[in-house]
Length: 106
Length: 156
Image (cartoon, rainbow over all chains, first blue to last red):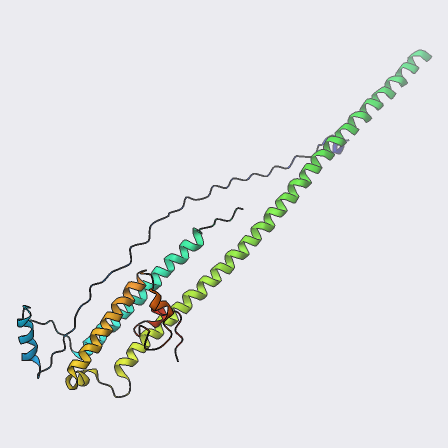
C-alpha cells in the first residue's frame, strides 16, 4: 500500500555556466634597440684611437672591459635574451590556451 | 436486510473501480515522469561525453605546449653553448686575436653585437623579416640566435 502511494520524483539538473571575462591585455611593443659601437683598444693603438675620437668630436674616454669580461657580458645578454623569449612564449601559450581566438561552442 | 447488503457490495465495487482508475492514472503520470527523466539522463550523458572529449583536447594542447616549450629551451641552450664555443674554439684566445688583428676583430665584434641586438628584438616579439624567415645557408643566418631568427635553417 505504502509503495503504491509513493510517487516517482522528477529529476532536476541544474546548470549555471558563467564564463570568466577575458583579460585581453595587449602584448608589449617589441623592443627596438640602439646599435652601439665597440672599440677595441690595445697598448699599441691607444693613442691612435683617442686621436680619432677627438677628431670625431667625441670625449676621449672609453669605458672598458677585459676580453674575459667581454665574453661574460655577451653570455649574460644571451641569457637575458633567452629568458625574454621563454617568458614571451609562455605568455603566448597561456593566452592561446585560456583565450583561444575561436571559442568552442560548448 | 438484503437491500442493505446489496448496497454495501455495490459501494465496495464502486470504490474498487475508482481506486483502480486512480491507480492507473498515477501509473500513467509516473510513466510520463520516468520518460522525461530518461531523456534528461540521456542528455546529461551526452554532455558528460562532450566534457570528456573537451578534456582530452585540453590535455593534448597541454602536452603540445609543454613539448614546444621544452624544444625552445633546448634550442636556446644550444645557441648559448655555441656562443661559448665561438669564444673558446680550440686554442682560440679572443684577447690575443684582438691584439694581433685589432681592426678585423673590431668589425667581427660589432657585427656580432648588431646580430645580438636583433636577437633581443626578436625575443621581445619583433616579427621576423622575409630574409630571416627564408635563410637556409650559414652565410644568411644570424649566428647569434639561429633558433630564433632563422626557423628554416637546419645546422649542417
